[in-house]
Amino acid sequence: MISYRQHVVSLVAVFLALATGVVLGGGPLSELGRDGSATAADAPGPREERTLAFAEEFAAAAGPRLYAAGLRQRPVALLTAPGVEEETVTGLTAQVEAAGGSVAGRYDLSTELVSGASKTLVDTLGTQLVEQVDRGLVDAGATTYARIGELLGHAVATAGAPEKPGADAETIRQSLLAAELVTATDEEAGLAPLVLLVLGEESEPTVLAGLVSGLASAATGVVVVADSDSGADGDLAQLREDPAAAQVTTVDGVETVLGQVSSVLALVREMDGTGGAYGASGEAGPVPLG
Image 1 (cartoon, helix red, strand yellow):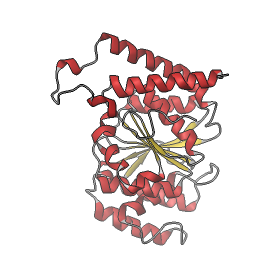
Image 2 (tube, helix red, strand yellow; image 1 turned 135 degrees about the vertical axis):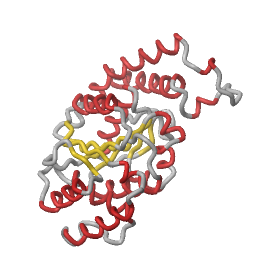
Image 3 (cartoon, helix red, strand yellow; image 1 turned 45 degrees about the horizontal axis):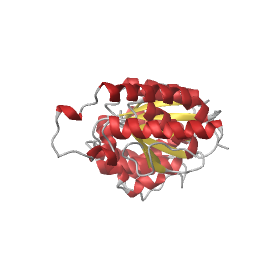
Image 4 (cartoon, one colour; image 1 turned 120 degrees about the vertical axis):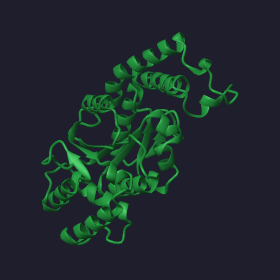
């Protein structure tokens, strides 16, 4: 006999696939029946809009049941790239809380960091910090952005239980803030086992891959999320082609409630190091379930 939870899971999967894959025009279903030219007919009609609205409401209502308090006592470090919509951040924060978790601290990455425009600064700072922290904490031989990603990871996250930042974390955090590579809403925030990285405007692919790889080496789990366009042919799509993506879970469609619920389900699964690519353009399916 199918349980109530299994029934909800099946329905959510169906509506996520429909809304993100068809209504939003992403993923492998988006090209069916098209002749290669964009027309007004490609825009969602009233029926599709009602379907999307229903799917959004359904996901919002079903999300807490699916989470099953999976983030209880598990804080999340929230990292945002330039250009992220505040509405998206607010939605993600609300879903983290609905899963029983909390945002330990928010850290905004600077344009200079993600664009690669300040590579000399990043390289010099990384080299200096490796000398200042405990030996072996960071791979001194890592590439510039993998190294700064690892340092950033140790400044905001932990591979163990949540804890207050120690001397090394404080040193790294204050150095990143002073260099204006990162800004923080709470400079004394605790270290979190989970990291949620929200992508925004265009980032340099090698920079993003390095940051993600470095973050993954320092945290219990990392989830990288972005909007539907990014998942189709933007930063997230490029990241998914890089080996660094195998170390994290990725989710596209985060501008929707559907994508936000999927992002938090991914965080829950990351406690076990599951991984995968989810969303309208994700090879693993529209939503991380099971």
